[in-house]
Length: 274
Image (cartoon, rainbow, N blue to C red):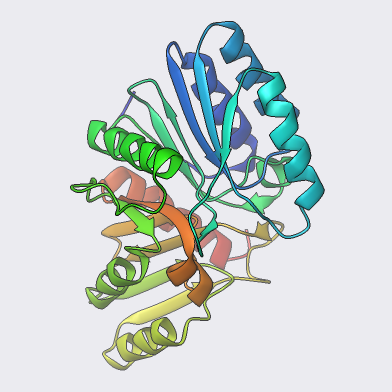
């Protein structure tokens, strides 16, 4: 498997997740915000039948999902899945990632729901990068067992973990822009980030933001930042104050030329309404 695989099309998302789960031989660590897709639940059950340890971190709350989260928290243990509701004080749990054995791992902007598998603009990076895999394993173990403790030291620098790192690392990335900043995010609302984007415009940097109403037939949901066609960040972090300062979020940095080219072409396609 190449170091990174970028998945953009809705038709590929579900199978990418299912294929990862089918690879599991020893353990699955899964972090979700919402899940209502029966194929995913079936593969979790299949993994348990193979003797795979399956641990799942689940948010305590999601708008409009009180009953469904309660039902999910009851269903999963009946399948042999060990779950915990994230217990970090004052931080809403919004991370979406999956680690299989000692790799691969995936980081997604989408929920594991039928809606996000079929109809949204979203992003996924599947990677065999051992540093990313280890970093996610360490983050998962921290959030599972000691959510009030500091982040693990030495996390892979390809990971951005919120709220601890979101604002500083994204501001630094935007600040490095010399030619262009291209963003897909329908919640660009944080005053400091808006000010930074205006500063970059004043410096002559081309700044383009696609959001609600700009994504053709797709429902806005996922987040992408692409700077100078040289580096990108994709994942669940939005340039909105709650996401930057009060949510457990995870995003991945991408810089290999093939992935950057795909993300740039995808942005152009959406911008053209295709």
